[in-house]
Amino acid sequence: MVQRMLGALLAVAVLLCISKSSLDFVAPQLTHQARNVGLWSSASTLVQGFQTSADSSAGASQPSWAVAAAFLTALAARKLSKVGRAAEGKKKPLRDLVPPPEADAVREERLKGSKRVKGGAKGQRFFSVRNRKFWDFTVWPRTYFRRVWEKKDFSYALLFGLIHIGACFAPFYFNWSAFAVGFFGYVLTGMFGITLSYHRQLAHLSFKSPKIVEYILAYCGALAMQSHPINWVSSHRHHHGATDSPNDVHSPKDGFWWAHAGWLLDQKGTWMRVDRSNAEDLSKQWYYRFLQKTYPIHAIVLPIVGLYLWGGLPFVLWGFFARVVFTWHVTWAVNSVSHVWGFQDWNTGDISMNNWLVGILAFGEGWHNNHHAFENSCRHGLKWWQIDMTWYTIKVLEFFGLARDLKYPTDAKMRKLSWDTSDSGAAAIA
Ligand SMILES: [Zn+2]
Ligand SMILES: [Zn+2]
Image (cartoon, rainbow, N blue to C red; front, top):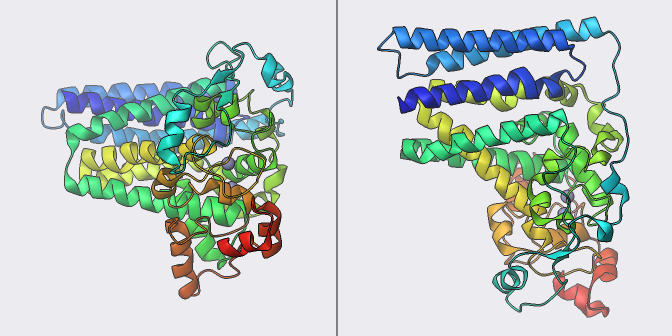
């Protein structure tokens, strides 16, 4: 019974992703009619799956029908999206570039007024040995719920919710092989994919690789369910362009939880993301446009089908649901926790912090004050004790000739951003 429920959940998750929300990625210009046909066909495949499993007692406990249905629907949805696009003719703009009222209003005038981050001072004691104070933890939270919710916001919330629910089932299907698959997936997609490829290579160009290696690494990033490279890199470059200012894509000054994940569910609050011209170096390449157009297939369908065929439901629950949720929160913690607690070795003028816990969990990304100081550096943990797994991996790639032109902080910039204005201060860090 539980397995049947899980199967149904899995199927609904995949079908919804593909039929509704993900079509926004795949074909924003898809006609309503084509969308409805897609949804209808998904629903009927699902019902047929239920009937088949109810008729067959042997197959009742196996959700294989769900995976098969999802796969077929994915193909159908792709086909429909092409039909929709052809019928639509020319491309419409993504969305009108109208800044929402809150983006215009200064933070101090927001509805909720100012608040202090809960546990601000206590958290600082935990994350900074010397417990130095860099800011007073005052934030101006955006309106989380009573605001304009666009269709895409609802779709994303539904998708996030379903994947979190799926992850909650993982402990009931624990076995060491499934856990190992989940852990391997976290390293593969979280480190090789997000931190090494998406962040350090694609967003900041901090080292170069042969194209084939770059593309393979970027594919690992696509598997992390954090959008395709063009979108991810563009949002991240917007973050660096306006760090912790009112135009930041995700600053805790707009609310801790907003910076953690709320911004992903608020299209209007992140109006600047519509402009992806800052990632033209990627959108010029066919491979990244291909990942953009076919994204749900790589991030959702192939991993789920592959893991199910490999090790059944436990592999899907640990290798997809639990792994995606854990990697999400680790990545999001860089934007929330590492912009609230820790210490600043560099005078960056923002509230980016060096946070040891995020440094460990996010493969070196928690040394975030170092990163905001020297954003093009392939090394984030600048002191020997600042563990930076991503940088160690880049060094290994360099050893095998798979990474070159590694960038590091320059002496001039170190001197400029050092709290210690004497030359010896910068030299001590180097
Ligand atoms: Zn940041
Ligand atoms: Zn960055």
